Image (cartoon, rainbow, N blue to C red; front, side, top):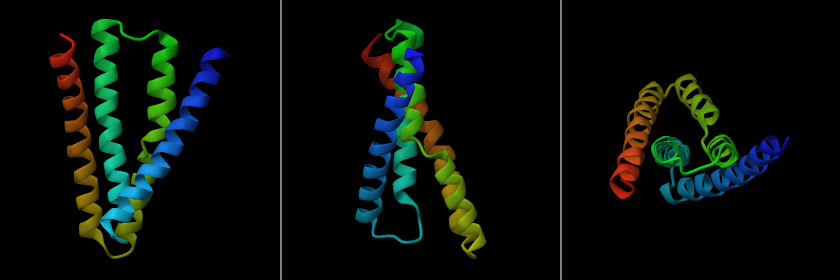
Length: 127
């Protein structure tokens, strides 16, 4: 039960952080078409997952409860894959197929790159 509560609190914190950061980035980008805020949040979330995963796996840096709080709760609430999917479909349905393609490719390439960068950063700092 404690782990479930930790995940719930983490999810709340991650969701509030996502809402705040995504809205700020989208406002700074001044784009009503391309979802920059979602892209930035997902890349940051992927980097953080890579960093935390490396530290947890190679250094035993987190207890199971702490890892659940951070990865499942905070980062699960922070990342926005469902928003990404919805925005991509909306772009495609709105005759913006090329933007939908750019959005999907950018999320996949930058997201995977960010997970790798997070792991590489953790390796270089904590080896």
